[in-house]
Amino acid sequence: MPPTPDATPPGAAVPDRGRADACPGALRLHAAADGALARVRLPGGLLTVDQALALTQAAEALGDGHLEITSRGNVQLRGLASDCGAELGGRLRAVGLLPSDTHERVRNIVASPGPGGGLADVRAWARELDAKLCASPWAAALSGKFLFVLDDGRGDVAALNADVTLIAGPDDTALLRLGRSATARPVPVERAVDAALAAARDFLDALRATGREAWHLREVPDLLPPGPVELPVFAGTPPRLGAVPGGLSVAQRFGPASRAQWRVLIDAAEGELRLTPWRGVVLPGASAGRLADLAAAGFRTTPGAAWERATACTGLPGCGSSRADVRADAARALEAAGTGGLPVHWSGCERRCGHPAGRWVDVLATGQGYRVAVQGAPPGRGTAVDVTNEETAEAVAEARRTTK
Image (cartoon, rainbow, N blue to C red; front, side, top):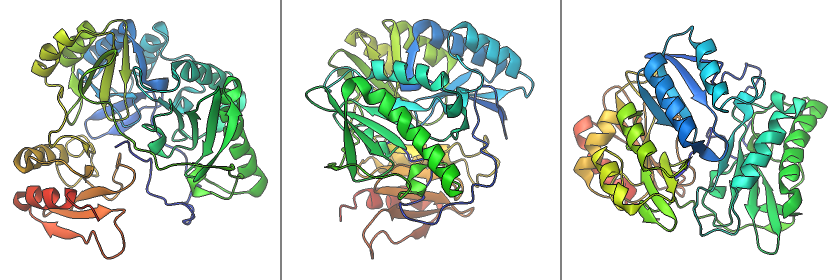
């Protein structure tokens, strides 16, 4: 499942937004325990082969040689020197990955990865929205966490509960959803991107007019009027792994992929890579004959394993706030559990970075082991249990089987 940026439910007290938005970018590096971190926004998750190669070369030359797909389909480079920002920026500009220095952190656009199966090809929306966002001076005031989602009608990324969501509909229409509203407003498809931008500007204008502080629409659900169209519950289903109509779909396990793995991806691609919020990659037009190479490189290429819908934060040693090497612990638990079920997320601290939306199994490091609970469960269910590392696999497997 795709993640939510933070756990604030609709109508809850708004967090203190008086502090600066410290969300990292390609130019504003974040000081992590393993060196500086850069986050490169990829609107719609779209990468050309040349751009993917440039990112791989930047990771080799400036960082630890790895690239990590984020829960918004962006890319992170880690292990960077704190003074490498100028060189990294130059490399990104040269291949079109940094079209605006002032807007690079607000280019947060997730799109249905396809290929095929939806009511619209939302790549055109992603490119139009990105261009207009970068050309709008007011948009630089958006938080680096503010998210646009473009759903092709199948309800895969609409489940992300973004700040502004466009959902393709039949008969040249689209639905505009604000925050986690249960309703949406219909808009003509040719004006859909402009409507999404207008909603983001209305959000900023309303905040200024009311003196309120928020990074997300869900924090202030009464700020803008909802639409008249009732929305269904969105499936939030990721692309099936393996050969899919029109290409291939693969996914990472935990953590960054090495330069060798990325070169296998690049070799398999036919001109374009589409990174997904499930930390996967769709390769339109790629041959099914490349699946064996991708599997041998360590990518997940078949569905149904315990790794399905399992995620983890960075943990130790990359994050100094973590209480455990959660990715290593999670990998051992998943291999031992051998089952799927509810989404599950391992966290090294209470921030729970990258956790899923909806109902999910929360595995929180305590320093002595883990606390396992089902988030989003009905009252009286999902009671937290504290377990040792050795007991985690069984507790997680049982929690993932929770259906009521």
